[in-house]
Length: 415
Ligand SMILES: *Cc1c(COP(=O)(O)O)cnc(C)c1O
Image 1 (cartoon, rainbow, N blue to C red):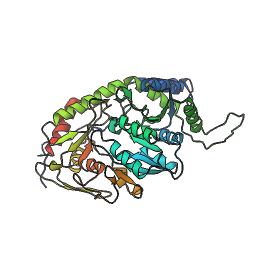
Image 2 (image 1 turned 90 degrees about the vertical axis):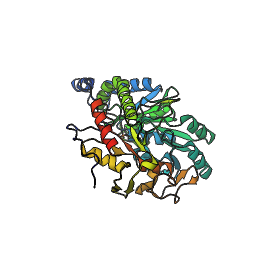
Image 3 (image 1 turned 180 degrees about the vertical axis):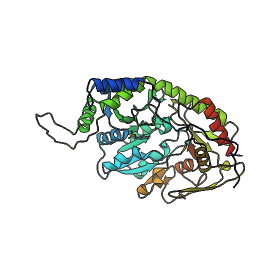
């Protein structure tokens, strides 16, 4: 096997995909909780981050919860998903987007991806309503910090009387037509997981304009205690409330959201410049209507520049070829030089756990039509992006010099 990138030296300090970026105020608010002994799931930090997030997002209520996934779980419950209900879900996303549908006994029906923003395809969604007119719920994610086609999705949802749950876990701070993501669903969520644009090390929030819903989420998240002198329960409860210590970290991070977005945006544009003239493109967005938070920068290799790559359920193989490359080669090469990339989220419809769930493309029923491991012509859109795409190191602490080396390493894969 010939060596395309033999001239490079590994990074001494690992270049991460996206790691926490602390500033100091986080420790101050954590210490504040410690010194005042508010070391539980009540306290000033929680109240303050709920206020700040609701203000930033432009929604009436933000409920601080343990994780983004817990927030999605309560959002799905608020939306009214019941056992046996089919729910239209984003297909190319992190499994946490739709696992809560399954927690509630719902059946995800996966909707294929569009090429303009890599989110749920409104055309496929409309098709899905033809096939399953009884469906009343949609769960949509804004992938990698890029808003989806919210106007089209909303129009279709309204036409069919369906409720939208918006998973803005990756897109906190991104806007569509001037409005923050997280406000386009009937209920929304964000995440403060360790690799998100701002983090609490963990944490999430449920977003709503409805006081009754916010109160329900608060109650469910604290074991559904009724207002009684003893532990009185009329509904199933959860231990989903955010810790006041975690909220301290988030309180310290929130003032830095815009700064992180600016850094991530600069990284995206530096990659875009760096790959000019190469047979690749960056993860696309609607430049006219949306402003992503640029959480992760991704690369899509042109069809005719793909070397042969085969992916099984657990491993991948490729044949190196001059002038061509593939995600496997690029990711393995980056790893060899101590830089962290990641494959695109593997679409849900090709995950073994969801092999029996329906999948809808623009053409209709997408099951049984495509070979699960091909790229380009004949593949559904999600499968094609998974086959040809990858996430590049997007850590906001990466220096321009480090990023230039990453670009050089990736470009050498096409030697
Ligand atoms: C991170 C993430 C979640 C889950 O958030 P956690 O806080 O890790 O539970 C949900 N959906 C998407 C798209 C995510 O990226």
